[in-house]
Length: 312
Ligand code: CP
Image (tube, rainbow, N blue to C red; front, side, top):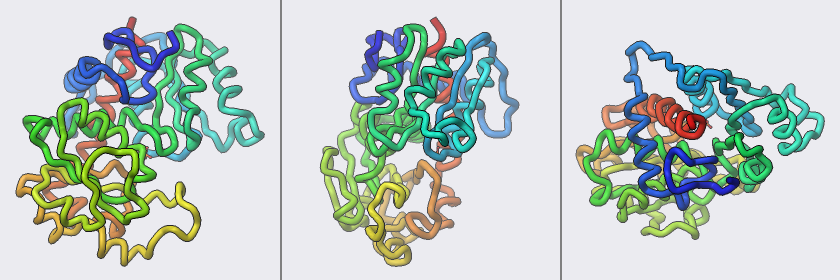
Protein backbone atom coordinates (compact mmCIF):
# COMPACT_ATOMS: atom_id res chain seq x y z
CA UNK A 1 0.00 0.00 0.00
CA UNK A 2 1.51 3.32 -1.04
CA UNK A 3 -1.41 5.61 -0.16
CA UNK A 4 -1.21 8.27 2.52
CA UNK A 5 -3.88 6.91 4.82
CA UNK A 6 -5.88 3.75 5.22
CA UNK A 7 -9.26 3.34 6.91
CA UNK A 8 -8.17 2.03 10.31
CA UNK A 9 -5.39 3.23 12.64
CA UNK A 10 -3.64 -0.13 12.61
CA UNK A 11 -3.44 0.03 8.79
CA UNK A 12 -1.88 3.47 8.59
CA UNK A 13 1.14 3.06 6.34
CA UNK A 14 2.54 6.59 6.12
CA UNK A 15 1.64 9.89 7.81
CA UNK A 16 2.29 12.65 5.29
CA UNK A 17 -0.62 15.00 5.99
CA UNK A 18 -3.72 15.21 8.16
CA UNK A 19 -5.85 16.05 5.11
CA UNK A 20 -8.20 13.17 4.44
CA UNK A 21 -7.25 11.27 7.58
CA UNK A 22 -10.35 9.53 8.98
CA UNK A 23 -11.57 11.25 12.14
CA UNK A 24 -11.48 7.91 13.98
CA UNK A 25 -7.78 7.56 13.15
CA UNK A 26 -7.01 11.06 14.41
CA UNK A 27 -8.94 10.48 17.64
CA UNK A 28 -7.28 7.08 18.04
CA UNK A 29 -3.84 8.71 17.80
CA UNK A 30 -4.81 11.34 20.40
CA UNK A 31 -6.08 8.66 22.77
CA UNK A 32 -2.97 6.59 22.34
CA UNK A 33 -0.85 9.68 23.00
CA UNK A 34 -2.83 10.32 26.22
CA UNK A 35 -1.95 6.79 27.39
CA UNK A 36 1.74 7.31 26.60
CA UNK A 37 2.12 10.86 27.94
CA UNK A 38 4.36 11.34 30.96
CA UNK A 39 3.75 14.65 32.78
CA UNK A 40 6.78 16.90 33.30
CA UNK A 41 8.79 15.91 36.37
CA UNK A 42 7.62 12.29 36.41
CA UNK A 43 10.02 9.47 35.51
CA UNK A 44 9.77 8.38 31.86
CA UNK A 45 8.58 4.86 31.19
CA UNK A 46 10.66 2.67 28.92
CA UNK A 47 8.55 0.50 26.61
CA UNK A 48 9.58 -2.38 24.41
CA UNK A 49 6.81 -1.99 21.83
CA UNK A 50 9.27 -1.29 19.00
CA UNK A 51 12.14 -3.60 19.96
CA UNK A 52 14.04 -4.63 16.79
CA UNK A 53 12.75 -1.64 14.76
CA UNK A 54 14.95 1.13 13.38
CA UNK A 55 13.73 4.70 12.98
CA UNK A 56 15.73 7.06 10.74
CA UNK A 57 15.55 10.83 11.20
CA UNK A 58 16.17 12.60 7.89
CA UNK A 59 16.01 16.33 8.58
CA UNK A 60 17.06 18.27 5.49
CA UNK A 61 15.94 21.46 7.32
CA UNK A 62 16.88 22.58 10.85
CA UNK A 63 14.78 21.45 13.80
CA UNK A 64 15.03 21.30 17.58
CA UNK A 65 11.61 20.23 18.88
CA UNK A 66 10.46 17.83 16.16
CA UNK A 67 13.78 16.07 15.69
CA UNK A 68 14.47 15.70 19.42
CA UNK A 69 10.95 14.52 20.20
CA UNK A 70 10.90 11.91 17.42
CA UNK A 71 14.26 10.65 18.63
CA UNK A 72 13.13 10.45 22.27
CA UNK A 73 9.79 8.94 21.26
CA UNK A 74 11.47 6.17 19.27
CA UNK A 75 13.99 5.40 22.03
CA UNK A 76 11.29 5.36 24.74
CA UNK A 77 9.39 2.77 22.67
CA UNK A 78 12.49 0.58 22.43
CA UNK A 79 13.44 1.31 18.80
CA UNK A 80 16.94 1.92 17.51
CA UNK A 81 17.36 5.47 16.15
CA UNK A 82 19.61 6.80 13.44
CA UNK A 83 19.69 10.59 13.12
CA UNK A 84 21.71 11.64 10.11
CA UNK A 85 23.79 14.79 10.51
CA UNK A 86 23.05 16.38 7.15
CA UNK A 87 26.04 18.73 7.24
CA UNK A 88 28.31 15.65 7.31
CA UNK A 89 26.19 13.37 5.10
CA UNK A 90 26.51 12.85 1.36
CA UNK A 91 23.70 15.41 0.92
CA UNK A 92 26.57 17.92 1.18
CA UNK A 93 28.12 16.22 -1.89
CA UNK A 94 24.90 16.56 -3.87
CA UNK A 95 23.20 13.22 -3.18
CA UNK A 96 19.45 13.51 -3.72
CA UNK A 97 16.95 12.86 -0.89
CA UNK A 98 15.69 9.82 -2.81
CA UNK A 99 19.18 8.31 -3.14
CA UNK A 100 19.82 8.94 0.56
CA UNK A 101 16.51 7.22 1.29
CA UNK A 102 17.31 4.23 -0.97
CA UNK A 103 20.71 3.89 0.72
CA UNK A 104 19.34 3.84 4.27
CA UNK A 105 16.33 1.72 3.32
CA UNK A 106 18.81 -0.90 2.05
CA UNK A 107 20.16 -1.15 5.63
CA UNK A 108 16.96 -2.86 6.85
CA UNK A 109 15.46 0.23 8.44
CA UNK A 110 11.74 0.49 9.19
CA UNK A 111 10.53 4.08 9.40
CA UNK A 112 11.76 7.42 8.06
CA UNK A 113 10.95 10.75 9.67
CA UNK A 114 11.45 13.36 6.94
CA UNK A 115 11.62 17.15 6.91
CA UNK A 116 12.35 19.01 3.67
CA UNK A 117 11.94 22.55 2.43
CA UNK A 118 10.62 21.41 -0.98
CA UNK A 119 6.96 20.38 -1.34
CA UNK A 120 6.43 16.74 -2.26
CA UNK A 121 9.62 15.18 -0.90
CA UNK A 122 7.95 13.03 1.83
CA UNK A 123 5.41 11.79 -0.77
CA UNK A 124 8.18 10.90 -3.24
CA UNK A 125 10.01 8.89 -0.60
CA UNK A 126 6.78 7.15 0.44
CA UNK A 127 6.12 6.20 -3.18
CA UNK A 128 9.53 4.51 -3.30
CA UNK A 129 9.30 2.82 0.10
CA UNK A 130 9.36 -0.95 0.37
CA UNK A 131 5.99 -2.38 1.49
CA UNK A 132 7.15 -2.78 5.10
CA UNK A 133 8.76 0.68 5.31
CA UNK A 134 6.95 3.77 6.63
CA UNK A 135 7.42 7.50 6.04
CA UNK A 136 6.28 10.24 8.43
CA UNK A 137 6.44 13.89 7.47
CA UNK A 138 8.18 16.05 10.05
CA UNK A 139 7.44 19.20 8.06
CA UNK A 140 7.01 19.65 4.32
CA UNK A 141 7.77 23.15 3.02
CA UNK A 142 4.81 25.43 3.84
CA UNK A 143 2.39 22.57 3.12
CA UNK A 144 2.07 20.24 6.07
CA UNK A 145 3.36 19.37 9.56
CA UNK A 146 1.01 16.59 10.64
CA UNK A 147 2.49 15.67 14.02
CA UNK A 148 2.52 19.37 14.98
CA UNK A 149 -1.20 19.55 14.09
CA UNK A 150 -1.82 16.49 16.26
CA UNK A 151 0.08 17.86 19.25
CA UNK A 152 -1.72 21.18 18.91
CA UNK A 153 -5.19 19.64 19.10
CA UNK A 154 -3.99 17.27 21.83
CA UNK A 155 -2.93 20.31 23.88
CA UNK A 156 -6.19 22.16 23.21
CA UNK A 157 -8.13 19.04 24.28
CA UNK A 158 -6.36 19.11 27.64
CA UNK A 159 -7.77 22.59 28.33
CA UNK A 160 -11.07 22.84 26.45
CA UNK A 161 -14.06 20.50 26.67
CA UNK A 162 -15.41 20.68 23.15
CA UNK A 163 -13.97 21.59 19.80
CA UNK A 164 -17.24 22.55 18.15
CA UNK A 165 -17.81 25.73 20.19
CA UNK A 166 -14.22 26.96 20.15
CA UNK A 167 -13.04 30.25 18.69
CA UNK A 168 -9.45 29.93 17.52
CA UNK A 169 -7.36 32.93 16.45
CA UNK A 170 -4.22 32.22 14.42
CA UNK A 171 -1.96 35.25 14.19
CA UNK A 172 1.13 35.99 12.14
CA UNK A 173 2.74 34.52 9.08
CA UNK A 174 0.00 32.15 7.99
CA UNK A 175 0.78 32.12 4.29
CA UNK A 176 4.09 30.29 4.82
CA UNK A 177 2.93 28.19 7.77
CA UNK A 178 2.71 24.40 7.53
CA UNK A 179 1.83 24.50 11.25
CA UNK A 180 -1.32 26.53 10.57
CA UNK A 181 -2.40 24.28 7.70
CA UNK A 182 -2.11 21.09 9.75
CA UNK A 183 -3.69 22.67 12.85
CA UNK A 184 -6.65 23.88 10.81
CA UNK A 185 -7.11 20.44 9.22
CA UNK A 186 -7.14 18.81 12.67
CA UNK A 187 -9.43 21.45 14.21
CA UNK A 188 -11.93 21.21 11.37
CA UNK A 189 -11.93 17.42 11.60
CA UNK A 190 -12.80 17.72 15.30
CA UNK A 191 -15.64 20.18 14.63
CA UNK A 192 -14.15 23.68 15.12
CA UNK A 193 -15.77 26.12 12.74
CA UNK A 194 -14.77 29.53 14.19
CA UNK A 195 -11.19 29.94 12.99
CA UNK A 196 -9.91 33.49 12.44
CA UNK A 197 -6.66 34.54 10.84
CA UNK A 198 -4.82 37.82 11.36
CA UNK A 199 -1.57 39.25 10.08
CA UNK A 200 -0.16 41.53 7.41
CA UNK A 201 -2.30 41.29 4.26
CA UNK A 202 0.56 39.75 2.29
CA UNK A 203 0.95 36.97 4.88
CA UNK A 204 -2.73 36.00 5.07
CA UNK A 205 -3.67 32.70 3.46
CA UNK A 206 -5.70 32.37 0.30
CA UNK A 207 -6.25 28.63 0.65
CA UNK A 208 -7.73 28.41 4.16
CA UNK A 209 -11.40 28.81 5.01
CA UNK A 210 -12.16 31.31 7.80
CA UNK A 211 -12.34 35.01 8.63
CA UNK A 212 -9.28 37.11 7.82
CA UNK A 213 -8.25 40.31 9.56
CA UNK A 214 -5.34 42.67 9.22
CA UNK A 215 -6.17 43.94 12.73
CA UNK A 216 -5.28 41.14 15.19
CA UNK A 217 -7.49 42.67 17.91
CA UNK A 218 -10.55 41.68 15.88
CA UNK A 219 -9.38 38.07 15.59
CA UNK A 220 -8.37 37.77 19.25
CA UNK A 221 -11.60 39.31 20.64
CA UNK A 222 -13.45 36.54 22.50
CA UNK A 223 -11.07 33.79 21.36
CA UNK A 224 -10.60 30.59 23.40
CA UNK A 225 -7.28 29.79 21.78
CA UNK A 226 -4.68 32.26 20.48
CA UNK A 227 -2.07 30.57 18.32
CA UNK A 228 0.90 32.79 17.49
CA UNK A 229 3.10 31.93 14.54
CA UNK A 230 6.70 32.69 13.78
CA UNK A 231 7.62 34.99 10.93
CA UNK A 232 9.34 32.58 8.54
CA UNK A 233 12.02 34.74 7.03
CA UNK A 234 13.60 31.68 5.41
CA UNK A 235 10.52 31.21 3.16
CA UNK A 236 10.21 34.87 2.16
CA UNK A 237 11.89 36.79 -0.59
CA UNK A 238 14.63 39.04 0.77
CA UNK A 239 13.34 42.44 1.87
CA UNK A 240 9.73 41.35 2.43
CA UNK A 241 10.02 41.12 6.20
CA UNK A 242 8.70 44.25 7.95
CA UNK A 243 10.61 46.06 10.69
CA UNK A 244 10.53 43.87 13.84
CA UNK A 245 9.51 46.64 16.26
CA UNK A 246 6.75 47.79 13.93
CA UNK A 247 5.61 44.18 13.46
CA UNK A 248 5.40 43.63 17.22
CA UNK A 249 3.43 46.83 17.73
CA UNK A 250 0.95 45.93 15.02
CA UNK A 251 0.64 42.14 15.34
CA UNK A 252 2.57 40.91 18.40
CA UNK A 253 0.79 39.39 21.40
CA UNK A 254 1.40 41.37 24.56
CA UNK A 255 -0.54 41.27 27.83
CA UNK A 256 -2.88 44.11 26.80
CA UNK A 257 -3.82 42.44 23.53
CA UNK A 258 -4.33 39.08 25.23
CA UNK A 259 -6.94 40.68 27.52
CA UNK A 260 -9.23 40.88 24.45
CA UNK A 261 -9.47 37.07 24.42
CA UNK A 262 -11.61 35.09 26.86
CA UNK A 263 -10.31 35.16 30.44
CA UNK A 264 -9.46 31.44 30.24
CA UNK A 265 -7.96 31.60 26.75
CA UNK A 266 -4.80 29.62 26.17
CA UNK A 267 -1.79 30.91 24.24
CA UNK A 268 0.03 28.56 21.87
CA UNK A 269 3.17 28.83 19.76
CA UNK A 270 4.77 25.94 17.85
CA UNK A 271 8.29 27.31 18.38
CA UNK A 272 10.87 28.41 17.74
CA UNK A 273 9.69 31.78 19.09
CA UNK A 274 10.93 35.21 18.14
CA UNK A 275 10.42 36.87 21.53
CA UNK A 276 9.57 40.52 21.15
CA UNK A 277 8.61 40.02 17.49
CA UNK A 278 5.42 37.92 17.50
CA UNK A 279 5.06 37.38 21.26
CA UNK A 280 6.05 39.27 24.41
CA UNK A 281 8.14 37.33 26.92
CA UNK A 282 5.60 37.97 29.70
CA UNK A 283 2.92 36.26 27.59
CA UNK A 284 5.15 33.42 26.40
CA UNK A 285 6.07 32.64 30.01
CA UNK A 286 2.75 33.72 31.53
CA UNK A 287 -0.05 31.73 33.17
CA UNK A 288 -2.10 31.37 29.98
CA UNK A 289 0.79 30.02 27.95
CA UNK A 290 0.72 26.29 27.09
CA UNK A 291 3.81 26.51 24.92
CA UNK A 292 5.92 24.16 27.03
CA UNK A 293 2.97 21.77 27.38
CA UNK A 294 2.94 21.60 23.58
CA UNK A 295 6.55 20.42 23.72
CA UNK A 296 5.81 17.76 26.35
CA UNK A 297 2.82 16.57 24.36
CA UNK A 298 4.90 16.41 21.19
CA UNK A 299 6.83 13.44 22.56
CA UNK A 300 3.63 11.55 23.44
CA UNK A 301 2.01 12.27 20.08
CA UNK A 302 5.10 11.09 18.20
CA UNK A 303 5.23 7.94 20.34
CA UNK A 304 1.61 7.30 19.36
CA UNK A 305 2.36 7.81 15.66
CA UNK A 306 5.44 5.56 15.69
CA UNK A 307 3.70 2.83 17.67
CA UNK A 308 0.62 2.92 15.42
CA UNK A 309 2.61 2.72 12.20
CA UNK A 310 5.20 0.18 13.30
CA UNK A 311 3.11 -2.23 15.38
CA UNK A 312 1.44 -4.76 13.16
N1 CP B 1 7.54 23.38 15.87
C1 CP B 1 8.60 22.92 15.19
O1 CP B 1 8.47 22.27 14.15
O2 CP B 1 9.82 23.21 15.76
P1 CP B 1 11.22 22.73 15.21
O3 CP B 1 11.47 23.44 13.90
O4 CP B 1 12.22 23.10 16.27
O5 CP B 1 11.16 21.24 14.99
